[in-house]
Length: 141
Ligand code: SF4
Image (cartoon, rainbow, N blue to C red):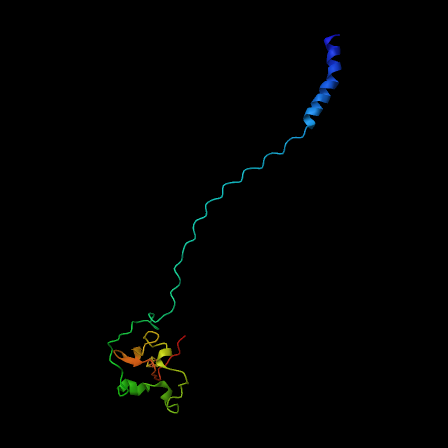
């Protein structure tokens, strides 16, 4: 048998063998390794917001405990109708007064929340009572 005949005889068997080899089930590729998770930073502990407390003045300007108490006889107090107890305001004389108004809820009151008295820019150098009132009252925003 010549080499050529031998080659032609073997080609079909070689083809079948090649097909058999290629048709074998190829194992599924291994799953890709999971990427390493990035370490997450620890949560930052935030300081709780400062609650509004009595240490916060109701308006700019620190209250001064040493201020002398405004007297109702003070000329400016008389002119503005200052009174030490707001609910005793003469409504016929001061028609801008409304029930509930008092220095402690006036925008100009410079005392701390809960203070019995505090400064007021309308009466420089004097303290007004938190329960007081005058015609300069401005509702706190
Ligand atoms: Fe009190 Fe009048 Fe001063 Fe307001 S303006 S804090 S009501 S004294």
